Length: 301
Image 1 (cartoon, rainbow, N blue to C red):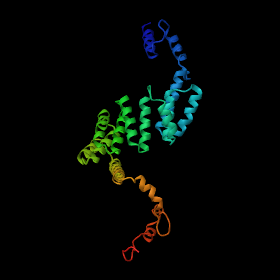
Image 2: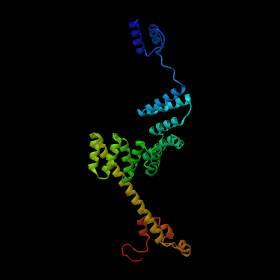
Image 3: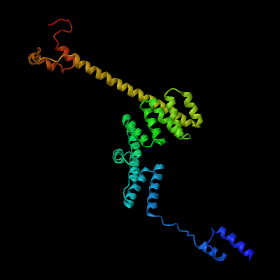
Image 4: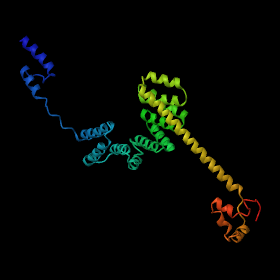
């Protein structure tokens, strides 16, 4: 009958086209029995990857200690992998266990995790104020993954902290152009502009990204901290250079004593019979008492 055929065709389409050739009633019954309320058992590989993703989400939420516990559980269940070691190294770094993190990072210096491992080493070096080591590790990370905006931003920021403002511009600009709406990339480039005294560019960047008042204050505070840090390091380097120069001058201008002088030195004594070499270890007031010139009269007694 036409009406029955039409009804069957319509129902069949709604029921995802049940088995061809079956009747309308049988099609409906077959469809209702097909789906199961129980989730299908995942393949071992899917379960393994899902567990890794769980650990990654925990770290993104800041649950670093909990992620370490799950790293151990994952290793017992599925064994060790480079990805798992990288997650463990990141968690160790974030929980202050830097030496253990460094050991894991260095073991991942090749392969797919090499860039992330170099990034981790660079962050540890930055925490320790090791500017050269931080620069080297972060630069390697950006070379291995040139499109990673996090690595580019951290490299630029490390150069800012080291006072290398002009060299910081390229990675910071790359990060912002690769991720135009990224607030962190915008704030880093605005910080670069403030440190160079270009307040107009900093303000333009802040307006374009709609940076809030708190973020703008943070940029100003970081700029002040970086300037103070750079000035302290420059002063320390200048003082060290001055000390080195004075030491070099003193060693080159004072002639070394001859053998004859050295041989005669033990025989030279003052009125109390003490060798002259012992007098140099006395405090200044004692040296005046044993000098050959009378301090009151200015004459030799």
